[in-house]
Amino acid sequence: MAAPHYRKVELQSPADFTYLYANTVALSRQKIDLNLPPSATHDDKPDPMRERVRELVDEYITRTFTTASSSISINGLDSTSPAFPFPAAFTAPETVEYEPFDSDLASRVSTLYAQLESLTTNVAQLRRDAPRRAARAYARELAGLIDEETKTEDESDEEHEQDKDQKRESLDKESTETQDMEVDQSSESRASKRCRIDRDPLSDHPSWKLDVSLGTEEQAERWRNGDVAAVYENALRTLQRLQGEADGETDEQPGSEGNALATTVGKAERAGRAAEVVENM
Image 1 (cartoon, rainbow, N blue to C red):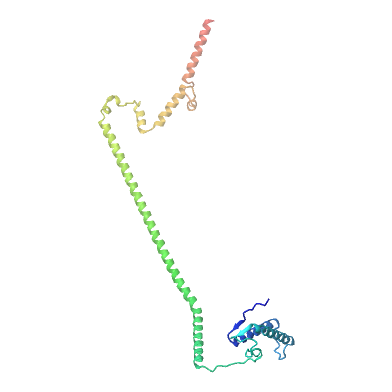
Image 2 (image 1 turned 60 degrees about the vertical axis):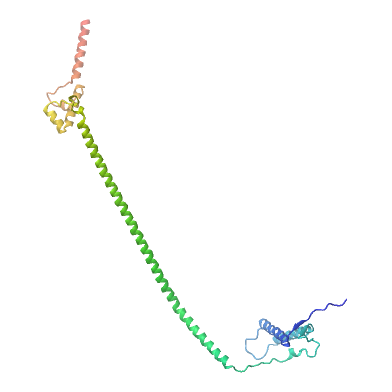
């Protein structure tokens, strides 16, 4: 059974093949520098180990591309064709090509460098001035907000005080009106009572008049003057004498009665009972 045929890798020009090979070699050089860094002594003598590793890597890359060239076709050319660039593409020395000097490009480069310097200067100036400007703008805005809040608070306080004053005035007015109404009602009630008393026919009846005897003129004068305490005190002393209670002030005075009325009545009753007993014996 015949082996299946695989399609070859198609390239457009020999430069593509050279480009792949050059990139592979450059990558191998980076790996060698990473793992075997060059000496820091700046000596012109190469490192033998580093040179040997580079030779082995280059030989491996060349063998790999030589083996893969049979599976590559360049613009329809096979590796067996005499026009196929192998191994001349690998062994040819590198050539450095220089373009002719272009004055237009040189002037453009100088213009761009001038713009770069100008922009750098502007950025440095903005770094110095922008924070100061931003701080001043922020301070002005903050001061304006604080002034607005202060004005709003003052206006609200004034409105609150005005509301309080109005409420206080209304309450005072209501209380004054209430007092006036109460005074008017009380005066009207008193006037109506007087009118009823004056119009009442029974008020002039003699049986409704209270005539209390106040005793002597002296006692009446006491009642009129309000000296009621002395009158009650004399009455209390009289009751104490009738009950047989001794009065300290009267006992001390010579010539005062030694016994009360109740004591005398008791003695008389006991004497009468004793006389009856003697008669019955």
